[in-house]
Amino acid sequence: MARIVRGGLIQCSNPINDETRKVSEIQAAALEKHLPLVEAAAKRGVQMLCLQEIFNGPYFCPSQSARWYDAAEPVPGPTTEVFMPIAKKHRMVIVVPIYEREQAGVYYNTAAVIDADGTYLGKYRKCHIPHTSGFWEKYFFKPGNLGYPVFQTMYGKVGVYICYDRHFPEGARILGLNGAEIVFNPSATVAGLSQYLWKLEQPAHAVANGYFVGAINRVGTEAPWGIGKFYGTSYFVDPRGNFLATGSEDKDEVVVADMDLEMIEEVRRVWQFYRDRRPETYTELVDLLP
Image (cartoon, rainbow, N blue to C red; front, side, top):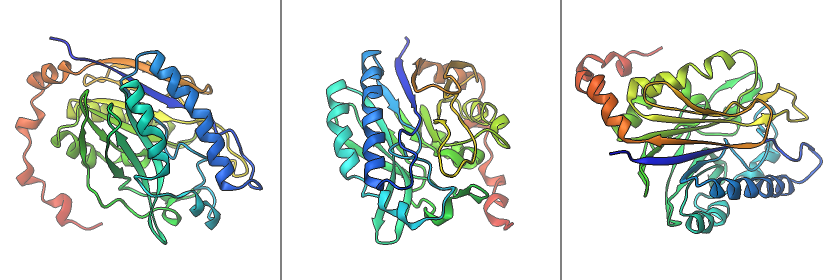
C-alpha cells in the first residue's frame, strides 16, 4: 500500500546585497521573502518542507568579517518561534537552516526540525566544515557535535545533511542506519568546480542507502563577494536514483514532488546493502589517520 508524502524545497535569491545595511535588516528582508513561498508550498499540499542553507540572509562565508556573527541566534530561538505556528497551521514539517549561537564565540551551521503539529523536534549541526577560497566556513562555524540524528515526524523519518556534508558518504550511511526515510541537504553552492557533482553524489547516496533525498540550492549572485552564480536546480530523487522534480537555475520557486515511502521497503528487498554490510572490516576508516 502506497504511503505518499508530498515534499517541498524552497530555492530563493537573497533580497538585499548591501554591506552598508545592518545584518538584522538583511535577515528581516530574507525572512519576509521566504514567508510567501512557504504559503505557496502549503497551497500545493506540501507536507515536508526544507529551506536553503542559512536561509535568512546571504551566504556570507566568502567574507571573514566578524559582523556576520550578529546573524547567529539560539536554536530553538526567535526564528524557530516564527516557524512553529506556521508548521502547526499548515500541518507541515519544516526544516529551517539557521546560523546558531550556542554561547559567546561558539557558532554552528544548524538546521532545526519542526513537526507538523508545531513541535520543535531538535536540530542537526553541520559536521564537515570546508575552508577554501570563497568558502571560509571555519571562520564562522565549529564542526557539529550532535552526530547524525533522525527525527520521527508525523509523516516519516527525516535526516539532515548540510551542503559540504554531501561529499562524505559516511554520514549519509549513518543517517540510513539511524532510520532516515528522506534526507534533506540544504546548500549554497556556485557554478564551477563542484557543479558536476551536484547531480551525482546525492542520487548515489539515495541508491546506496535506499532513501529519498531532497537537495536544495539557492539562486542568484550575492554582492559584494562575487564568488559566482548560485545555480539552483534543487531536486528530489528516489531510492532508485530517479529524479522526481528539479528546479530552474535562476528562479525563486518551490520544488514539489510526491514520494512513496513504501518504495524504500521494495528497493531494500532487492538491494540488501544493510544486510550485507561488513562493519567489522571497516575499522580502518577510523583507525587510519590522513
